[in-house]
Length: 402
Ligand SMILES: Cc1ncc(COP(=O)(O)O)c(C=O)c1O
Image (cartoon, rainbow, N blue to C red; front, side, top):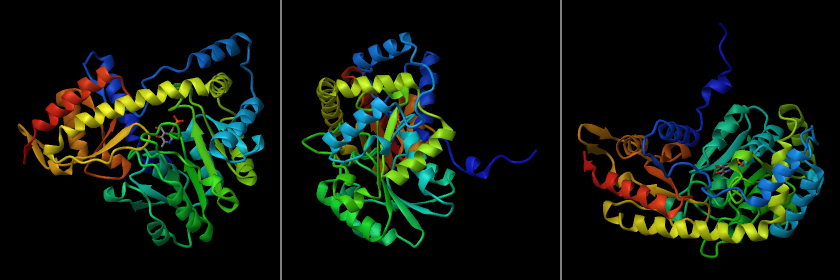
């Protein structure tokens, strides 16, 4: 038999999705597992969106629709971009996709030729390098520093650029580190991007989940030159807890948007119309949806950080997240470790041990491009968090130095 595509077989499945699948399998098998693993809201999808789906179904809105997304949804997104992000994207410059993941994939497809280099600050969201590889591009990782809040500096960006560099993939607020870039930091990066004639994909899916006054700023709002080379990604999976409905969107300059519409017209046609109606209802109700959602994650964050503070004597370290709902916990001081006969050398060993021994799901840092860390998601109720952090504390305290 002939081999499968090397592009497909050379990439690995998403470690976050794989850990979540394992957690859900164990739960289904009756194991009392709890999870700090999945990057998904614990909240329910807004009632307005539920009603919109019911209504759309009853009204038979189930036929093929526009390949770029429902015109009324793109008009609403164009207003959203203008009011919330100070970016002007006309409805024709917006593509509605099956999740932000699909938006990033489509944007990369429209820009990359084989051999093009894409700069990705690490730690990164697990999908970025694999999507680039799948499209024949070359991911170039720039290691950001814990001490610097895991933020890419203009100097490091400049040093990574070669004649083959085509694009920078930036994520603020960031999964997994919780870093939120300030306007000044983005201006400094934008100056390099414009000078070096790069494209930028700005993934802003956590824009509404920020803490302690941190503000998510859109690079495309910083001036016409950077706007002309930036695609802005967003979606309904996080702030609107609509992750299962798979709905995202992307705004981009006209030529880039046109190329993406062509790609989507062949790859997917368009995302589910039911999800698009739900999204429209969310945008209309966002002023009521955001305050309780933000308060929920702020409370969960405060609790998670207080529990971690009680573990400082073990040598674990973290940066308080300014956005998103994760803590990227440095556990290198604990490794290598022993639990009975079991030897733990890596973050993967530690995550496996916590799952096997304490029924606690976490995600090893390696999938995010950084060994020596665990990603903990605090998108959970306080009850679940209490149980999860009790187990984490027991699990980490039970380790002996190898
Ligand atoms: C940084 C980042 N971008 C994009 C996504 C994808 O979101 P969606 O569910 O809209 O595909 C995620 C999901 O975890 C994410 O963390």
